[in-house]
Figure 1 (cartoon, rainbow, N blue to C red):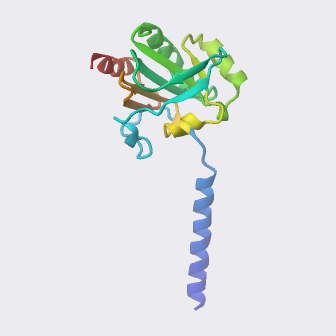
Figure 2: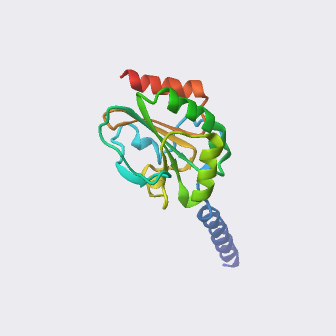
Figure 3: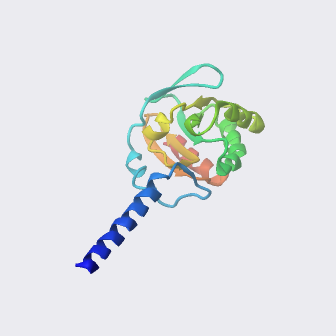
Length: 183
């Protein structure tokens, strides 16, 4: 009887430790391209992208979603995210290169950041595309975001065609964009 009681106590303690470890987890950064998408994100591929409205750093309200004349790229980021800092110059270049064919929205997940730090980030990297503020993190959650950076490519029909967690070399990201543009 005592042996069973000790075994039960050990199981309960280990279970409590495991639960406590998972409760404290927050969004993370990803420094390398994920080869396969986590099950939380993968079901969104080839589905209609959820539509949303967000305020921009420029004071405008941006509506994203549905059929459009251009391909859409969503970049979810935070100023403290080192991989986000590393990819910013490449995304700026791609945004400018494909501005006539693609709308890029850089979405600061302000619920894990601050507007002031987002503004400093934009100034530091001289970003010229619209910078949106996900003040409560609702859009990041809507798109099942689990890590920064997350880049989502949406075709002209409003269908999610690619989800990338982490940094991808600029050449590889450009190939992904070109593939969607050629469809």
